[in-house]
Image (tube, rainbow, N blue to C red; front, side, top):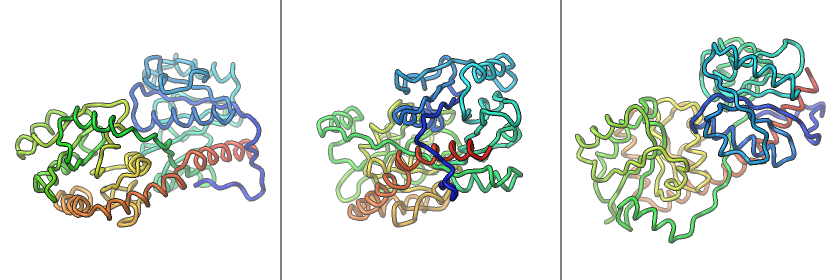
Length: 370
């Protein structure tokens, strides 16, 4: 995590204008974090200019008072958008221009050696060809930061700042019961919830294989799997569920704007990813005070502690995943312990206060030393 420089050069008390550029239209992990960070900066009295795609769903996630500038950002060779970004910077003169993911970063080219400072945020192990021109870089895990340095970026300009999750408001019991009934699951069912894009890297095939090896009931209670998300494997996964004879115990919700409505129902949340740079689903589960089973992908292995705040299993190992799921589903006190420890970590190490303060300290540090 970025630490306050020892010389005390970082002043986070003065209002600061920053521009935040992102090219995505849908609401994935990066887009949702973008909205949370920009909203949080606004609440702290810092003017954050939101630069997004004209049809992006992000706009609806931002506070109404936040100034928004639509720029198409159709692709990395969109010279018109590149010019618009440069003109926007000239007009508003932000101190920091922070870009998110590849498209926005590639289209943002600022005068070298002059302000504003171009800060590129990475949430994955991407090719760095389109990122090297930035002035500084943020990785949201230490593993990503190590990757950036190994691939030639100067260590003194690479900073680790994680993500944060806004603590959710619990729903009233009657609302929870309504959601369960809408899912058509028995009132006493144990619910296993998995959230994510239905893509090969997310490991949903492994989850279905693990779920198929579990008994239909544990402790006299039926077990159901709730899959929240959509993606290219949608039909293939449904067919696999039929082949495994578990289709009647799975509920497919499709893409959901608020997956937390389903995470709140969970007795157990599973992150079966084969590749996961961070694992926002784990942070969300902790925020809901729900127990987690996750694979030893890079992100979960970094942020979670096995048998302390999560149960970690090897990647692409359905048998091990099934054992872990059964262990936790049969042991309510263990589930409660993992959930409580995870929640404690979420509200301390991954709180809005900690993460937003780290961003503001980094902005001030870069401005003081550039």
